[in-house]
Length: 151
Image (cartoon, rainbow, N blue to C red; front, side):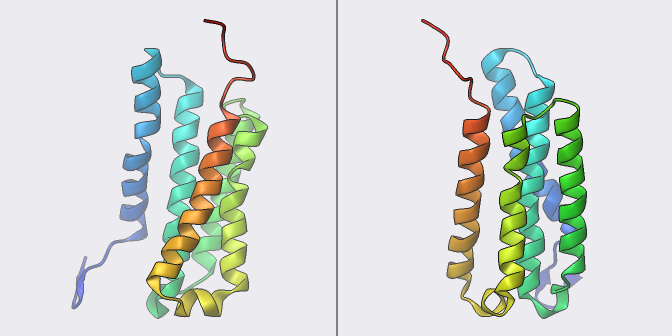
């Protein structure tokens, strides 16, 4: 879809882009282990849902796309998907709970919406990156084995 200022990306296109980037997770796992597990695919879904949540927070900065409802709906659906993956033993509890970082970010944006809308993009990039790093740390550590196998 084109507009006067250039190309406008739909939310769906942006989410598909994040899903494609996050596909590196199960592909790297498969290349390393020689098989593709349901847990690796669940991590792909979790990563896609987490990083796609930024689509909804970033859209809040523009008056044309500043509706809070789509972000709330997205995060509720994402939480239900993650709960389902946990219920079917595809994700551990800690791994599933790492999505809470996205919920915390959304609540922070809602709480400081005036700052978030008026802040320079550099500040928003730092804000988003900090939440992403916390998520990555929790999600990554949560999938490590409790003990490394002996050599």
